[in-house]
Every structure is written in C-alpha cells, then in structure tokens.
Image (spheres, rainbow, N blue to C red):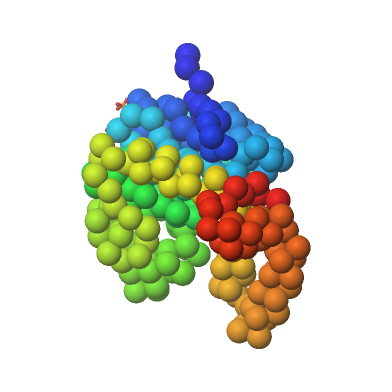
Length: 261
Ligand code: T3D
C-alpha cells in the first residue's frame, strides 16, 4: 500500500501531498499523524522556508474518511474528541507556522478538506476544483475552522448559504468572492504554486512570517493594538540580517540574497 501522505523538500519548499487518490484523499487517523509531523518539520527545519499543500489524483481532499465513521460498525465516535485530537491541532499548526503555506487545490475540496485549504495563507485552485461545505448533508456543522474562515473571508450571508445548502462553489466563483486568491488553468496549477513558493522561500522569510502573524492578529485587534504590534515587530525586523541585506542590495542596485534571518 502506498503512503497516504508524501513529502518532498526542494529549493527551500516543503511539498506535502495528500495521497489517497481513490478516496479523494479523505482523512484517516494515520494521515493526521503524518501531516502533523510534516508541519512540525516545517516549523523546526530552518531550511524549509515555504510549504505547498496539495492532493494526488482528481481530488484535493474529501474531508473525513466516512468509512471510519460507519454506524454499521457499531462504534460511536466522539466527534468532539476527533476534532480536538486531529483537525484542530492541524489548523492551529498551519496558522501558527511563521512561514507561508500555499494550498494548491487540484480538485474537489469537501468538508474538512475545503476548510483545510481555507486555513492556508495563499490558496490557488485549478479551474475544475470545487469547494463544498458537505457537512449539511450528514447533519454536522462546518468544522476545521470553517465557520470562522467562511465568515471572515466572504461574510455571513454567503457563509450561511454555502454551509446550510452544501452547494458546490466553483473555483472561479470562489476567486470572485475572495474566498481564494486565484483560480488557474488545471495544467498550470502546480507550476504556479511552485513558482510562487520558490519566490517566497528565496525572499525575506522572517518578515514574511511576521507579516502572516500581523495580518492574522488584525482580525481581532483594534487599530491601536495593531499599531503597537506593527511597531514591536518592525523593531525586531529592523535588527534582522534580511533587513540589512535588503537595504544594502537596494542601495547597491543588485538582487538581495535573503536568508530568512
Ligand atoms: O468525523 C469527524 O472526526 C468530524 C470531522 C468531520 C470533518 C468532515 O470532513 S465531515 C465531511 C466528510 N466529507 C463528506 O461528507 C464528503 C463526502 N464525499 C462526497 O460528497 C463526494 O465524494 C464528493 C462531492 C467530494 C465528490 O463526488 P464525486 O462524485 O466526484 O466522487 P465520488 O464517486 O463520490 O467519490 C470517489 C470515491 O471516493 C468513492 O469511492 P468508490 O465508490 O470509488 O470506492 C467515494 O466513496 C470515495 N470518497 C469520497 N469522499 C469520501 C470517500 N470515502 C470516504 N470518505 C469520504 N469523505
């Protein structure tokens, strides 16, 4: 049996591929363990300066593998426990990682699969991809941060309609609504994602990571709090090697060589 999750590091980019294509990369407990380990590696390995998350085959991710929830098996699974153990730590790890995470949504993203994509920093989707808040069809609410992400990204009106109806949203419409960054041609998805990730990984990644944190903090901070946070962070970055290199490179009219330090 092939590994349910593949990882590869190239040019400072960790590429994580969900790899259960026959089940549209639906999540199992084993996949959760592997993806948590992959994001832990992204956090601790200084050579990794950007992450791409994608799926193998025709789907990105169909959320929880429902065969693990088969009522016929007679076992009632406490979903509060599975969310607290598996999905919530994953979403928190992505949001807390001070490195950019690009999601390349190669096909259908349903249930927690859709919301996993929305937790990433920059979401590109193939034009054939769809986003489905499938939860309504099985009597659940959007999880993996879905109620939060949808509301913040597209507002209550659209969030409620998508979540209550489980209607598929095309990648194009998702782009037009601001749910994702960009919808791209199917055969250009991975090259666009890799070009972007390599560009970020070669950039001033200390500052890029802090930018992510500051923008996320803006969701709950007041302007006053945000001004303080910007001053604090800029003070820190002003002492960084990347800032020194960036200014020197500008003044010397040459490309900067950033190290993420
Ligand atoms: O449980 C907890 O811990 C709480 C957390 C929950 C998080 C969640 O994600 S709940 C939501 C779970 N996901 C869903 O409800 C989506 C279920 N899947 C679908 O609705 C459809 O598959 C799609 C709309 C995503 C795609 O439809 P389509 O027609 O393109 O493909 P398909 O034929 O339905 O699926 C292809 C195969 O993948 C098929 O297997 P088969 O018949 O060829 O052997 C199908 O059973 C399998 N598959 C798709 N989704 C799942 C799955 N197998 C297990 N679990 C799935 N979620």
